[in-house]
Image: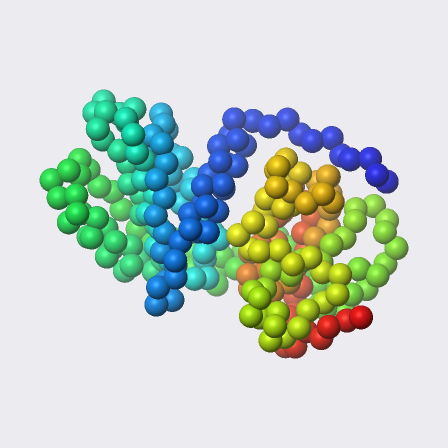
Length: 248
């Protein structure tokens, strides 16, 4: 059927989450990798809910960068909505915790005498392995053979797409799969969100079936869960082939 599903009405919380996603994506895209650690700084205009909004951005960053060492600093700028109009908010998030502590000490020394109060939430309560297991518990995982069979089955109901999120270097080394969509990890959610102005033309409904694969099956699981939160029907390849042969 070519009829699009009716889009649900958006709430203010939906809008805040989307803006937080956009800020997080820009922060990751503008960051740099130094000695294996992804570093980034982002300044945003001060609002009435500075701390709550920055935490939303940090949650997205922590989720997307779960398997990579990283430190990001997000701060408000401009007149503050706090009683002191010159007081702004700085949030530092990252992994491992030692990197965050170093960044905090550096910021404290740079703003010596100007910090009104500081709070450390401490490390995440779940490790990478636990988070990955929790993500996979929400997914339908497929073997390469099952994915191949599903992609060649007659289109009944929701259309199915195969998405390759590997880097260019990985695709050059291992080859590609003809017909797959090559989409950069940093923009994947925007390409598959029917509400996004950056969505793919084929993304005009919420019941799409998306099969995501990467080099070793870890990042694809986390990506699939992110798509699931957009109300799609993502599945994940349960066993990644050691070599992906180009299919004609």
